Structure formats: structure tokens, C-alpha cells
Image 1: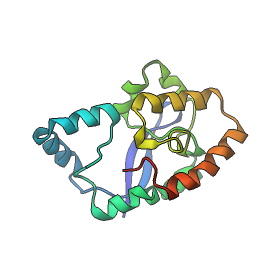
Image 2: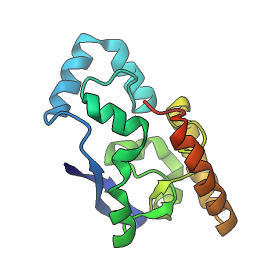
Image 3: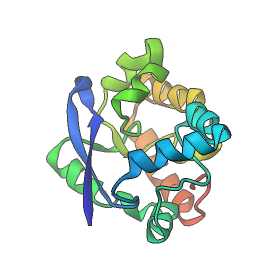
Image 4: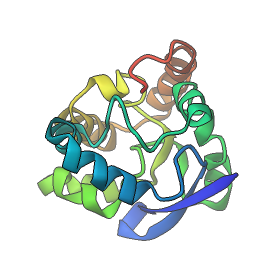
Length: 164
């Protein structure tokens, strides 16, 4: 089943980012309840916007996420012009705060299906490192770099490095 989630795109314009559904329907409530019972999980979330043991993710969803197959529908976003093959990962409005003075670099580009962060450890990196990857990419964008990132995406996906 396809799922669309509002994300921040180029020039700060929202778009509907498509994915295969990997979470339970009432995910926000499940997450809030989990944080009430597990303050350490809230700290993990605040540091990385990810959880190693996310109670919202279904069994099949976990498989789709580990293999990045949940993101295949984003090829439709690329065809529609909302996204690019290579660029920063699409963010939600709550994540803008993490970009601080670097937000203009993020919004200068279309979000990408893959990018420097995705091929450099994904969840094994901090959010500050993710922002640094996006800023560096925006400042040093080139066709050869895009090709290099696309080629590095294949082993990153196959090895599921940094995915959870």
C-alpha cells in the first residue's frame, strides 16, 4: 500500500513524498505512548530522529526499510519533479530546526532518492553529520559526484549498512 507524507522540498515548498507503508496506521499515538514508557527512546529520537527498535514499524515494514524497497515509489516523485535521483533526504517540518543556518542549502536543491548521507552510514551518523553531508553536497554538486553517489548506493542498499 502506498503512503504519502508531507515533506519539505526545493524552495521550501511541501510535496507528498511517496513510500510503501511500513508503519501501523496510528503511528503517532504509538510513538507517544512508547516515549511515555521509555524515556531513553525519546532521547534517541531527539538525537537522530530514528529509533533502533521502533514500535510503529511492522514486520514486513522492517524488511522493506532494511532493503530500502519502501522508497521505490519515490521514483514517481522524481518523474513528477518533486525529487531528484541524488540530493539530500526529504525532511519533515520538525527537522528544519536541525539545519539552523544551513536550511537555505537544503532548500536550494530537490530532495534526492539517494545522496551522500544515504551512502555514508545513514543511521550510523548523527543528525549534525547528516546536515553536514547535505551542505557539502549543495556546495560541491557535480555530475561526477552524482554518478559516484549513485554507484555507491547499490552496495549501501545491498549491505543494508546503517539501516534500521
